[in-house]
Length: 425
Ligand SMILES: Cc1ncc(COP(=O)(O)O)c(C=O)c1O
Ligand SMILES: [Zn+2]
Image 1 (cartoon, rainbow, N blue to C red):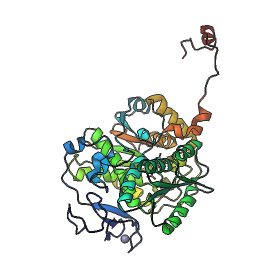
Image 2: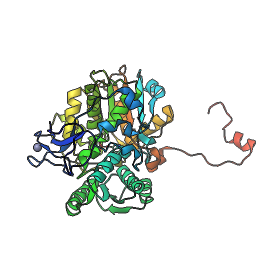
Image 3: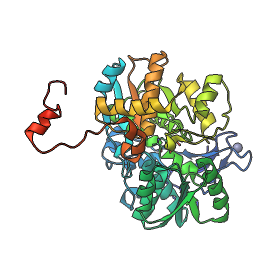
Image 4: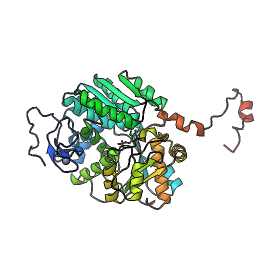
């Protein structure tokens, strides 16, 4: 709890809407809002506390068609909607009857976050981080990234007219490299894994005090952006919470914050409070959280990633223990699928729903299928899965599995000779 009352503003403190303080997720100690991310008492991670105003469904619905409709629930200045941002969010929630029929489910929805400005959910977290960072006086937006975050940071900085410094492992998908470089910021490719890049970023954050590393020194604000996935899902379901949700895991922040978003809506009386179960999805080649869940461990043992799901290839996930808390508390599970299952699942999603997800989407659909087969997910319960990124950014993963027919002459005879006229199409 904080001593600040809503509407008041300590001199020199950043103006971050209804956010009042940072509090330690481990020991609960609070500190003032600022560019701090670890507790000075126990080094635990900090998260944002608020004094929420009374909010109505109507006031949210009258907001802009992007994440800023939930600005009162985020650590951002009140006038954020009029500032230059990429305006992410309010992506479509698709009723997935085709995929549901294939999997023997009754009510399945896909939250399709490939529709964001740089085609992944990362635009949400970056927009919130940028708003908070600007308010705290940072001049440069930076990040270590597994690819999608790099796209989002480079684009958001370009839109806001500030410098960006983006660092990625050099072996990323070519599409993600190009879709970062095009925005023209400082772009560093590193010979190493994401965990190496992340360590380098943490060292640089100590040396460059005016650089906001979105997922390092402004991480408490950044992570709050993923709550908007939870808010939107509930609103788009007609202000209801789903029974089950399946979320891909890299650092684990997205999963933890979707759960927090559901809790906040229920606490504010915007949705009826009811139980929901949270499930996590990883690739077998980088599944430290699934391993800890399966073994009943409270700690997550770091691994060296090796998977085509490069966006999820974080071997030492910062929010791993908190994912375990959420999943165990809600009666969910964490599971993993192999690279061939990821490719199959990308194709299944495309074939049944007309949605082309990236490898992270394949991981989520694959884990959905696996947990249905094992009886851990209830096929009759209303379920939402997250498609967090666009298949156009991970083309190499599916290219070997998708056959493209040879060209024909532009004649009916050639069309028929190639067998396209038959009933077997
Ligand atoms: C497409 C995609 N989905 C999911 C995730 C996982 O996000 P988090 O690190 O919050 O677990 C990432 C992270 O980079 C991602 O790029
Ligand atoms: Zn602490």
